[in-house]
Every structure is written in structure tokens, then in C-alpha cells.
Amino acid sequence: MLKLTCRESSSSYIKSEPLGFTIVELLVVIVIIGILAAISIVSYHGLSTRANEAATVSGLATAKNQFELYYTEHNVYPTGLDENNCPTNASVTPTDTKYCLKPSNGTTYILNPDANSLHYTIRAAKDTLLYSISDTRQPAPTVAIDSNWITIGSQTWAKTNLNTGTMIAGTVDALNNGIVEKYCYDNNEANCTANGALYSWKEAMGYSNAENSQGICPAGSHIPSDNDLKILEIQLNMSQAEADKQDVFRGTNQGAQLKIGGTSGLNVPLAGYSYDETPYGKDRFGHLWSSTGSGSFAWGRSLDLDNDAVYRDMTNKAMGLSVRCLGN
Image (cartoon, rainbow, N blue to C red; front, side, top):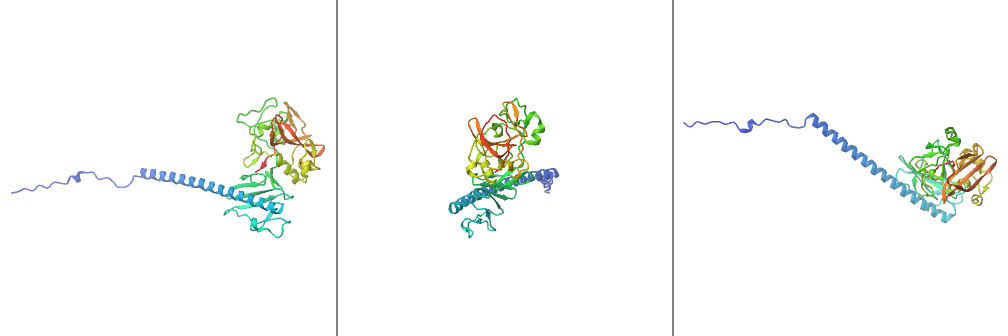
């Protein structure tokens, strides 16, 4: 008789394995997905921010072109924007709609003109972006107008003299060493706190020679140029002819307007200055740097306790003067 023998399939000896992932493996997968998602979000946010910045800068450049065309036709800059972002000026009637501005979606334009229709700043705000452009400057990030800044005509100024950096003795030269070094009148930090610090021109400029450099000013602002200071003085009703004078006190009462208690709101203190390792003139003189220099000298402004006008001259860059920052 044929005997049949049944054999179990060899597969029956293979140990069965559980299907799917263990808890640890699932957690690893979840963590990896989270990391990839975070990277994607950050990447998208960065691309979105750069796109918004590009659109804002492009829009402001176009706005400046429109204002220049407006000026060419009407010999004045606009002093306002209507509800359609069309430029207005009381001397131009009816409103010229050829030069209406077209901000990108979600962008708000704010026009800061001066009283003489000779200068302007357009501020563009979109989400957290804040940029500006003026008749004298290209688009750049600018400061938010808050309790630390004041708008005077087309300009936004810091309300106080700059006081940043590490104090060094008046007998020590400031160096280009990556540290902001300041002088305090009479080597007393309390004078820096009260009136702002004193800086050599090179230190104030961050060792740049470029006019309108940010220097040691906060982001969105810069060391004002000689022309920026002229614009301020003219906005305080100094004539252009007076503003252009040098080595004399100019104007009428613009110095009084700038000093503490003056109508400008800038409250520039008579903080004195330092020269050849010696402090001079606290409570008698106030001196401000500009970013406009040549050789060993740079333009500055001086205020005097006994004079209501403003002195303009070239000052030795080695002297220690005050800095008042200007928003872009």
C-alpha cells in the first residue's frame, strides 16, 4: 500500500511579524514630518517677505517717478493724497489724476510733505514692513513713528541725541574695533544719560565715508547729511539763501526752535563738545554732526546759548560732537 506522508509547508515555520510601525517609529516619523513642515513654513515665510519687500520697493520707486513728473509739470510737489492716492496741492486745481499712485495690495501710503512743497517723504506700510522714499533718497526700511521719533514736515527725527556704546576716557582715541565707543562730557556717564554721548565723526559714521550712512544710528535711520539739516532748517522757515551760508550764524530763530523748549520739539541740549582730549562748553554750546565730509572735516551745526540762529561750518572729524539720527 502506498503510504502518503503529509508535509507541512515550510512557510509554517516562518515566524509571523507584526505589520505596521512601532510607537517609537511612529514618533520618529511624526517628528520628521514636523521638522519638514517647519522648514517649509519658514521657507515660505522668507519668500513671502522678500516678495513683499520687492513689491514695496518697486511701488515706492514708481511713486517717486510720478512725483517727479508732477513736479516737472506743476513746479511743486504734492502736499497730500486723496482717497484714491492721487496727489493734491492747493495750487493745482482740479486734482491732477494722471499721477495717481498705485500701491500693491494691502499697502498703505502716507505722504509727509513740507510746507514749501519742495520736499516730501512717502511712507509705505504693509503688515510689519515699513519703507520710505523721499525726493532725496531711494527706498529704504524706515523707523516706526512712536514716542521716540517726531515728524517735522517731510522728515522723521529722533527726539533725543544718540547715546549708545561703551564710554571711553576723553584721553583715548576711538578705534575701528567693532565696538561703538562714546565720550561722555567730563568722563561722566550721567552727562551721556542726560544729553546724549559725544562721538568722533568716524565712530559716528561706523567708519564709512558715504553720505547718509546709517553709521551707529538704529536700523531704519541714518546720520543726516548737510542737505538733510538744511531741509530741517528750511522747514523751520529759514530761507534757502540763508541755509546755504557757511561760517556764520544763519536764519532768524531756527536755533531757538531747535533748543530745549523750542517749538520744533527736537529739544537739542547744549551738550558741549570735546576737542584735543578736553571737554568744552556744556550748557553753552550744542553741536551736531552731519554725514557730509571731505578730508579731515565734515559739516556740522552749532547752537549757542546767546544766539537764536544756527551756525554752519566744517568741523574737524577728530572732535567729539552729538549725533541726532534721522529716519529714512
